[in-house]
Length: 500
Image (cartoon, rainbow, N blue to C red; front, top):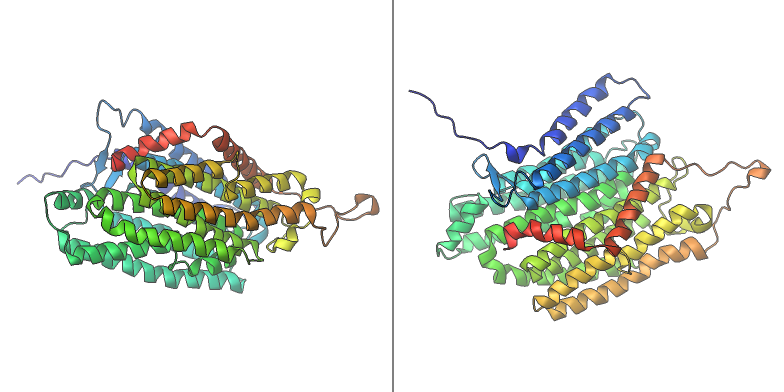
């Protein structure tokens, strides 16, 4: 009897392959490189991410020709190749590249000769990309665990620091707790529908089957799991401590990458598999959005540590993104994709500045440490000012356009109250973002700029890779603020497959 194997379309895995191979290659290469040469692992990582980005760009047109299929499935609909997943491949690839650039100089000071850092970053990016491409709840869970396990390790990468160890332990314990909710939700949905494949769940509901209580509870547990990953209130308590204790480069990666991956899966699950339940779950997300924006911004007002301020800021920005999710529709979802790109650029750029201005192993983590920076490091301070303006939503920056699109989508979706609350929260956030600028330019530095004529040591020069990350981020932030139409058009093309 001849064994007939099912046909597998490998196209959905092509953009993922360089990241997976790169992770294995860098992990192996690190073993054979002599001390002092581990920076070559970073170059291999950049090559792997660049290859993934190029393959994703190449797949956008020929693989998804409008005259042929707009969506391709691999291994029984479990992995999806469409413009939605390709968009997130590009975003996550950009986040990975910027993370490695800002990590190169930082890692040299914080943990030299530990090249496994870069393989962990690649495996984390791979898990995030798998979440964006997941057509099956099990695959999404596998992607979530892949990037989470890598991040647990990265959070504790500074092994000799108690804060870093505490950060990793808290993230591991609370992350495992949230994963349990997510997995239990998958089990309940499977019990109610008999499948975990998103397309089949959609077909099950479209056939007129009323959603059972088991199904609704399962959806609620998925919401808890996603809420933890995006750090929405009341699932946010882990974020400030984890972000503060983790290495600064890892904090930047978590703030940008985790949100992008979680929202990619969030959108695909709740808009593709559960659209019939929109009226049921949108009310809950409305409440989450208001609480998340308000708590994040109010608590950020009183922070004196810049990493904790960014942690609560990231919570508030998750609330803005939830506003667009409540609004729904193609414009609302496209605004989420646009904002995720803007959010990644301005946050990674700000953290790149934090790394670039550190003095050797001493990091500037208190707000008062930035007093006089505008005169000590004028270019880096100006870039930081651009990122603060963008995060607060002041034109002509990417943050302003992102918030404009989100609040416009809320108005178009008949949620004027939510839009007003979002605008008021954005006004509140202006205080703590502009406070950084005021400190940089209007406060006197505790230690004056060294005078070389008197033999004083000059400031430690910034890492060239970190400066490059700053420049790429600031140019991207300004470009999206001045010319947002192209990215918004790509976002609309990407969401057409799930938002109609």
